[in-house]
Length: 201
Image 1 (tube, one colour):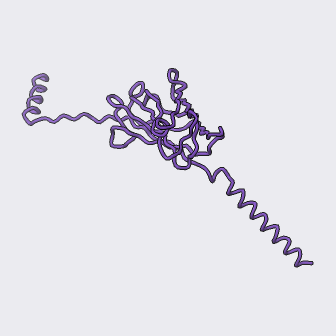
Image 2 (image 1 turned 135 degrees about the horizontal axis):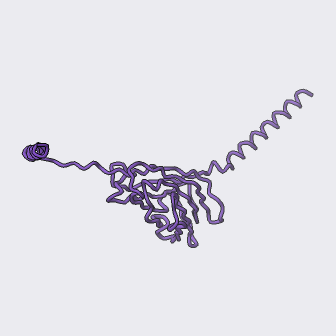
Image 3 (image 1 turned 60 degrees about the vertical axis):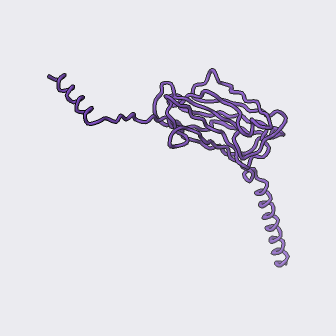
């Protein structure tokens, strides 16, 4: 009698283990993909630039885990004192053989966020690659510093209009202008020093 009960419990435990394993394999986390940012700035750091003279372009990238991207809705936040967005456009994957319409929803009313929708025209794209390029100039006012750039919300949709599980990364956008330097000869320095002495007299 005890032997039968033991086999029964072992059989239940094995079945429960199979159920747990199956649930793990079917879990959305197993199919999770990444959305990230890369930059093409003019500074030594790819995500840095001098906002007085230059622009900084940031690419919104998907990794190889995204295989059936038909559309997206993104809200991206930045510091408006450090950077100001000037353009949002389809790029790489969405600007090639699979045309995608990009809507910058708050282009004329933004404060510290960019709200953008992407809609594939009857086709899907797959990573890795860039789906958007967003370009910035200096902020208002043009304060030097570093602006966090991150997702307030992000939704990726597949061809069945189902959400694609993913993690959205972040970036730091630096608006830093080099200190101007001026080389002077010894005679030039001497002349300026003598001018200062004359003014003081």
